[in-house]
Image (cartoon, rainbow, N blue to C red; front, top):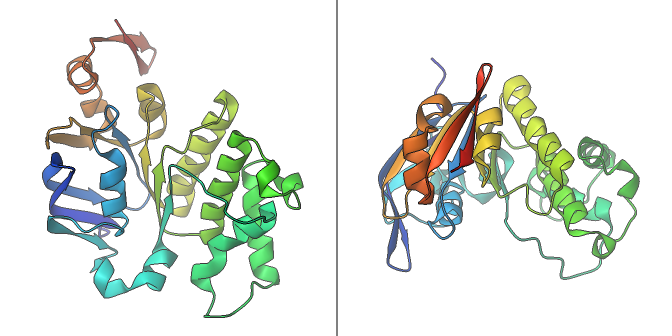
Length: 257
């Protein structure tokens, strides 16, 4: 059996005196996608940053490919783990291509410049999100949705094994939401990546993800196969509102009552 790519053991995470998870265990293998679901303010971003090694847990440990982040070190970790932040900042003028090339920095030696192969990878990433013609555009001229897709392209150019995505669908219209989740689903299935994605749409989680992690806001959590985790009772408790299941052939859809 292949060892899990991302492992959390006995994790205790809190923020501002609020418990996010207690005694949290997770084993995510390559080739699978995990959806993180919960109400606003329950700590989804805090947990994601902890899994990314950017924030130490109060107890327990996180391992990537069998190693802790401390043992791996920042650059090797960045070659294996990529994080899409919830908010993008552009302090200085740059082209779209230059912004995407930032994703190649973990693969470059110190003070090295990007080469032709890095440029090819960056342009392929832009094409993957439908922005091939935007390479020379200034990043400050983009709409919110276009800027979000550039951030996703930079993450694709990084080529990690583990993708941690904090609300990747922000600012995206419906067709791009489906395209982006389909893209990461394909990376998991065909390239053996592992994906952790914070989502607000239960039905998209059911459609594109293998596992679901439910955060209840008081340290309690539930994690497992999507088919087991997503039901009326759990979702009603999760969101504080009754839910109804709508059968559709082999699929189930969920809607508020």
